[in-house]
Amino acid sequence: MWLPLKERAGFTSDGGFQTLVGDVDGEVKSRQQDQFNTLTTLRLVARDGSRHHVAFRGKMAPDIRRGEKISVYGYLDRQGIFQAVKISDAGTGAILADAGGCFVATAACGHPEAPEVLRLRAFRDEVLMPRVWGRALTYFYYRISPRPASWLTRHDFVRAFVRRALIRPAAALAGKWCNRGEEPHGR
Image (cartoon, rainbow, N blue to C red; front, side, top):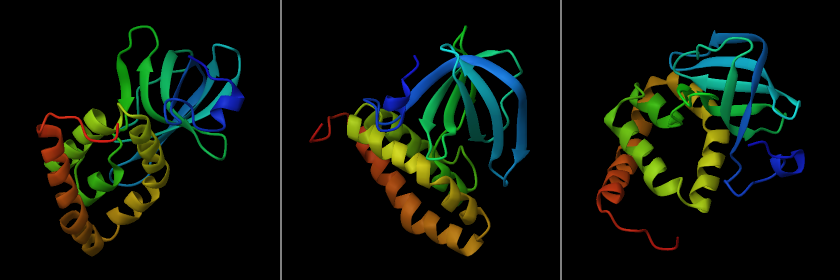
């Protein structure tokens, strides 16, 4: 699904997230940013012929080649670069890359599969993403959190403090919310 430029400029009905489908055009470049993230950039020619710069930050560089048909889920940033959260094969739907999204929690806990990160990810998927306000909150978080997370990886004392004072309590609440099996108020 391709959204016209006027819809891409603001929030869409999906909280600002959208999907671009097209062919990879040109070289796919990847470079290590920090101990947790690799930045991959590519150009995508969408089905309507429009061209887009796409950036993906994840644990590892996706195995994508020129000419591949891919589906990219993410948002358009203020510089006009499409920030991908998930990249999949347009034909099969197989996921080629998934950023996971819990940037600060991953940085604070030291691993993307830490129990706290998994609980927060489940909360995002089960509670936030099914709701318009939750998708808007997630969109905002994805836009602002990569820089603080990157900074956090370089400051051990602050990382330990954030893990104990913020991430662990938030993960405990998220775990209780996801396990109680009822609808939150104000949907």
